[in-house]
Length: 155
Length: 359
Image 1 (cartoon, each protein chain N blue to C red):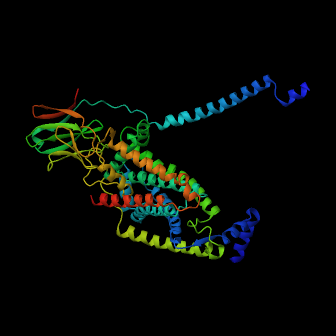
Image 2: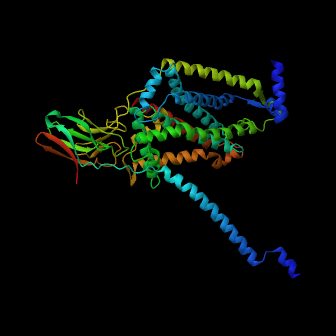
Image 3: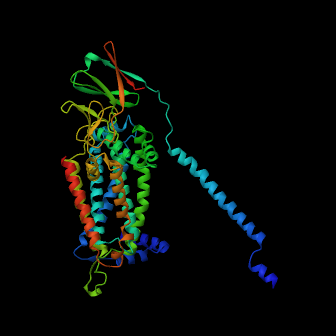
């Protein structure tokens, strides 16, 4: 009677042996999958490229920059827009629209900085005045030394 | 010759029982009713996909997927390679017609409620293929590395970046870095010619297998008509020949479009040039693009952009899973609500596409 009962249900030590094997095998499968997936997922993430941090860029001679025009300046890997207003004042902002990453341009007919992608507008103080942009353009500093114009990061 | 073919048939038949397949094809019937014309749009989408595979492989022979060479290699294809202009033009036109026929196919299935039980998985695989088709369009658009493509990719990937929490890593993954650069081009090239075709082929296989297994869906109410009143047409050869005739017409249309309206290449992308005035995405993204223009920067406390993307995502998810929440059609009852939603979506897309086009 007692023996019959034993044969139909495993004894406690057999159960724990089975549990151990299940955890062991399950854990192995998991570890195996992780060791395959982790390198693949890590591979998908592009590595950080060493970038020389640019603090200041020379644009050119002041006399060459016409009033009421704008131009894109290469600031390291990022575009910066330099605008010379009708009255001769110089302004510089990150040329990347705060809306969806397009590059902005100066529109003399509007007297505004304009983004062609979704019709976003900024005034010459970089403030988002119309359209979808959610915040002002990041400001850069314009320095005139002698007759040379420099654009530099605001610190 | 016939002797040889017969021998070949017997040879294969002895090994894989070809006879059962031939019998199956012989007994395949297509329902005939006043909505039968929509049946052809699935087939023609398949035809256009095949054209894309063939012309895509041809373009691969000369295309170079790098920032310095991509634009120039397409210039080379279009000016130096014999019929290169034709192959590229057909590939571009077919891409657009493919999205169009797939859309017509999708809407016809939607309005016929052909997604209802037992064809939920067919609809689901079809929707996934449609999203992949948009991915094909988006990734392929960048490959010529021209000005329009560059900004379209900047905007498109930036939209992905707006999604809270997971958005930023997705954007970096898609771009291969923080910005759209040559690294993005390499990734998109890989997606376009390897990842997407592979996934698409698997889904297409399931989709076609289900269509063969379950047969064509019939309009609601026709299912229970007495067998004598149902009109059918043998698939082979009657329906197949009609299919082929339509394919031939589409092929001619493609040739006309490719020859008389060759696809432009535009200006090479300049990472330091402002976005050109009048920039627009491809027509099938235009309605979303136009909507984004109208949403103000802030709606109550939510960013306008996040709101727009959330609404489109939720709508897309609901649309994809319609067989699982439209219980009425599943029971074989008419569901007018579904028609109203569908009509609204169709009119919305058409209206905003036209407005976006004219703007």
